[in-house]
Image (cartoon, rainbow, N blue to C red; front, side):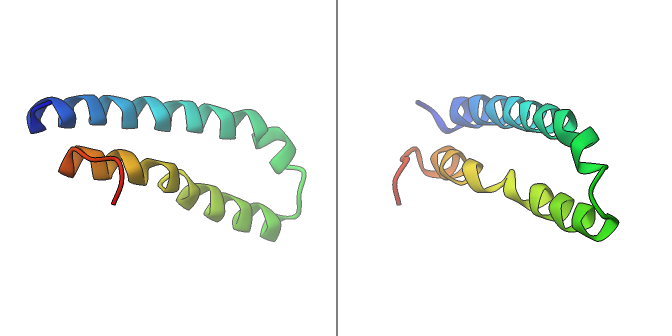
Length: 69
């Protein structure tokens, strides 16, 4: 697969993943809003960073064409 097509498919997958991830987080927002404010802040900070971890292999594939290291 050419780098251009890998980038196109990768970007589409990233947008889809982030959309689904945001919807799942939004589904839990009513429950999260019942927690103390500091817990909410910590949880949203963790969730705001956690989305990137599963995308690392995809980003690696987009750049190199290989899934592994």
